Length: 407
Image (tube, rainbow, N blue to C red; front, side, top):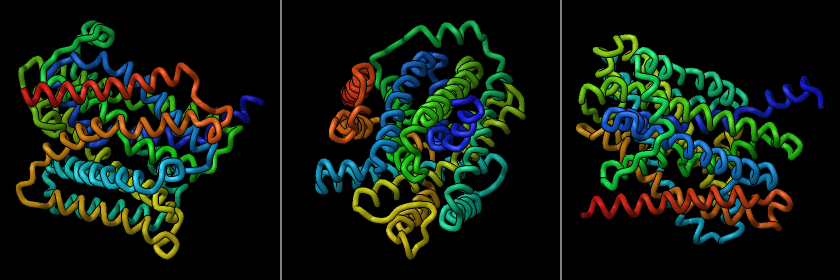
């Protein structure tokens, strides 16, 4: 195959991996990375390399299942493990994603409040915009918009450079592991894992691959898409931690979320760093608030055997668009409650993601290793080792976090 033909296939296929990974740097994720940098300095930088490897492996498995089977993850769970297990899994994931959706609107409200815009204006307008984008748009338009939006995440790289960190210290921290049996450290570690490898993204990625109708002979391009997206999302996370570690941690400034980080950056990196940080948060919040309810709608409809897809209207897919609309409305109502703790909503949602992740990964691993389902596309021993290690580590961290918090 010529280089020109390969490039054409890659441009045609690319999208699901890049979008899924970058949208995972949502309001809750940015808040988590900001707090990690401000409270622990560069102590968590070393975690990003193994997390990137785990993210690539986990997402590649879901993308591969989508290409080979032509079915979404929830659909495969229902077919192989029954409706009862699938129903309860969907209930827990729906509640988790409702918290995640509320967290996205929380991030939108918090970021635009820095520019003097009330949440009673920004949140309803943002909700109407993303609802119209999905309900009235097409998948091609939807995907192109989100690919352009991904470029906005580079604002965090610029913010980190403006913070003028000691790059020697950064390099050492990036490869030198540090670990503490402390409840705040462990909950932060679980939150970082949960925000980087979130349960919803596995369902969404596989559904997006299926909807794009990617063929087996194009699968190599999907792998490239997944790898680039996974690396890009953790590069952004890296620079968020560096920006806050280089400024707020050194000054001993404690923050509650990403908007606090944006404000606190001004004395150290200038007002433009604050504006860039806030714009990045607003961008991430708005478009993640679009993707998260969409992912939930996809996997619930797949699990129940209902029609799903961005290209369908209310008459063709009433359950799909109904669930999507309900999640947006409920997420908005939660955030518009007077006095609701916006930061707590964002932070708790990421820890819940980390707790739920092992259960979803176990289903993925059993499915990907079924020879009657995947044929020659089953996992290699290396992939199984990395994936099962991820499950074990997240479970162990969750238990350790709960024990230390209780004690």
